[in-house]
Image (cartoon, rainbow, N blue to C red; front, side, top):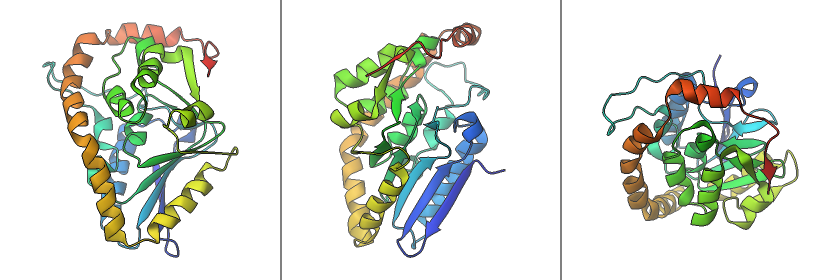
Length: 258
């Protein structure tokens, strides 16, 4: 069974990439990570596709990040880290067609690897954004770097440092610029497809050149932040068994939404 579905509309030039593990809240395992990379690379060479929508199956979550059942062996050096999520985004796979993320339900943790590489985000009113790393004794490194490029610093810091104690509502995400549009429940994907169809109707080279130019404004800061991330994670993370204890003790309803 595939974990990523790709559908294309020849009439509009829009492809929809769907994270398809709703029973796991679209959490990313190694198979999904590989499929996402393959999907982005395939879309690079499909000239019938001129814009892309990224969404998640089901109503509960866009994605809750890496699947906690995934075990990734790590090098002993604090300067190297094998993070499979670094390869799941469109920009990491050299795709310069515009990507609109459509978010419903939860988007948290490793979901920000994907949202951080989308060109803009449309959310329905059920969407909530949060990052659980610090609550479970983990350094939020790559996600912090990506979100600090998309949100005011204080808002990014608050979301990452508050952990599971707070969730950012779709409305608040819109107010601070993380989300560009809020729709009625269930309307994010349709709205994202409409926006993507507009971009797909423009000359492709002009659109893709603009995407590349926009991303160039962020690359230096991202590279600098990512360079610090591996040893910060190695130095700051609690041992895996202690993380598991904190995760087991979590209180699903112990948060506020603002």
